[in-house]
Image 1 (cartoon, rainbow, N blue to C red):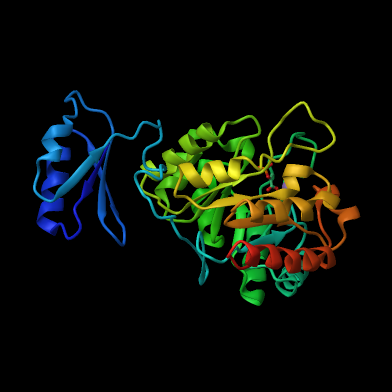
Image 2: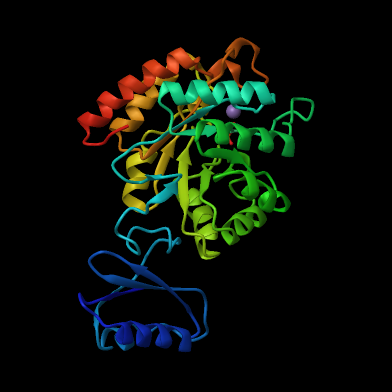
Length: 338
Ligand code: PEP
Ligand code: MN
């Protein structure tokens, strides 16, 4: 349930509504929009919520039931798109930032050289995994903290903020120390201990959709992070498992407008894991921008043929430069910029 306050409701009236919610045994979540304040009622309590008790309180305009299972992630609760800070720019506004970089951080030289190439190609942020969730335990697992240090060095040189994966709750503090955005990978979308831990940090989180997760599952996972007090959450479509084998995953472009309608959280698209093949990455990036996405996360490598992971889907810096130019034209066509 949400309590929508009238235009110009006083701080006292808002405080009274919050006091009533707490008295009934629920938690109040304040969302102060430009137009009006919305107070969300979440949690469980033996006291039933009586809509009419709230409707008659001074300063209240109306009371609306949120029918979805997710509350804080719902656009009903927070009508304006949330802006997630990304080192001087934001995700969720007019600009569509492009996060680019290798699947894995392979060496100090590789990540620094790649960061410079990404900056030159027009990227806004650098991606790269130091902790890699690999299907096989025999595949390269990442350089761990050393990889994070190299990423931080690459940021110092280029100014590009760092997006990197955190695989376990015990690593959150360490990854926060080096990274600007915590990536929660598809395989960990329902690792609730990890979701609680990233929710307790105030670091921006890029939450990827699990390969067999529905849009609702994704938003329920986002809800965990929000319920822990971290409002800086982005949700990312990265392709889902279907019967189709021509591509690594199936890009669920539908999910972009659906998510934009259902949630106020910025929506990111990953064309690299969605297709698994570099030759399809540009087309899908353009489609995602046309569909209303707020940011792109793209894998790029200086030498894709010799990448330690996901080379087949990685663009060269030259290919990324061409993609950025085309993305800019489509962005302009839909009243955005890249
Ligand atoms: C990645 O970004 O390299 C990655 C492992 O992505 P996902 O979790 O979407 O598979
Ligand atoms: Mn990858």
